[in-house]
Image 1 (cartoon, rainbow, N blue to C red):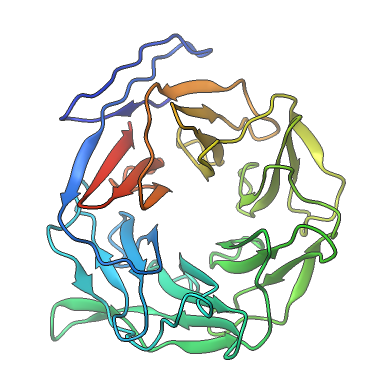
Image 2: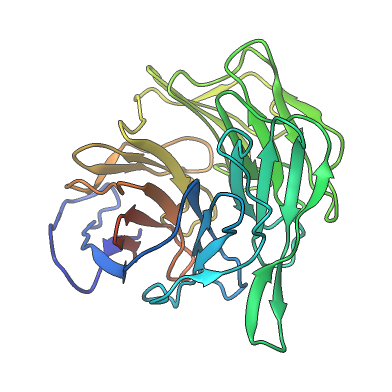
Length: 327
């Protein structure tokens, strides 16, 4: 059993007996103060391959990606320019901006999934520049010339347990879940991964909640949480993993908060943060994980920013970034 803790800036403390039993306590930490350029979106991933997740922003054409590397206890004091000034487009064209290890080299890459021309999946690989002692995203190349933009969400997860991330388009109705699997240097042709009628009332997520290495289909409903385990696709009848409704009023996230190898659910609410741990075959009862507000005005993320193997929470605000670590 793990707990959320910090080292400075105490703003709230929760002590409660969990079913293990154990205690959950949390303290916010300020990991960055200053300006972080982010015109389109902010996400996270281990882009330099050092074992900690970094912050990455996507911006309009001419600006390129900006990165705040994690040192394991803070983000670097200054943002870094990682290139690809022509990779980003206007918000209408930049339909989905992702950070995911597409080639299984241990470094997360920058991914744009576009609906209008030039449509498809575009990947800018992360690579070192030894002569400069720096890193960059290489110029983007088109991995797929087809549409995989979901009207519910477009995300990345390892659906086939081969070690690299795949692009997933999730749809509300009328279209099945579509997946563009990574072959390491390009995307394979689109494949239908779940029937068109299957989606969550409140959230549809892709995460390995069963711990077998392949992402499962997680459906957060008003009546509980259902899961379609990878077999290998999400074509089986959804299983009821919990009859307790569980979704965040601000955001519903996934991450392994207890380092047991399967992803758990995180509900970010307006007044608190709650978690529901996966047992591998179901979800345990919800737990209060942070009794106060923890949301970023610009973005709220689940990421392993300290590199200890469990998921932390990151709140990105104008002028600062706060972290709620799990330990």
